[in-house]
Image 1: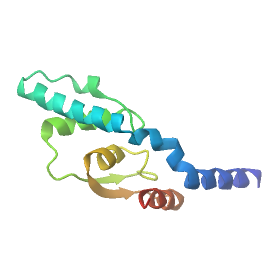
Image 2 (image 1 turned 45 degrees about the vertical axis):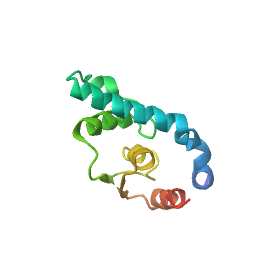
Image 3 (image 1 turned 180 degrees about the vertical axis):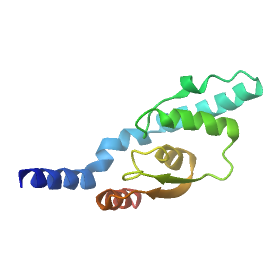
Length: 127
């Protein structure tokens, strides 16, 4: 009973106050810095002086520096279609595609088996 109550309280606060946890990820400096990095990688591609993908990782929304690696990869490949499908995305906020969605205008589908996570994600993205 105690564990269930604790989980209910945790989910309530997670649902209602998720924006306070992630609001620093939406600052203009984050967006500008990533745009500059995108253009830097494009320039390095033209000069044939690309860094190793291992050196490009950073976190904004992802858990393990996937945001930086994906930015690097799509800077090199190009961002033409800007569509993603992410399986196992939890609420979609702390995911590999959220940075592309929020900072680069991508659209797509977040898929997860946890109904509470999907509900939290819908509430967050509807704002």
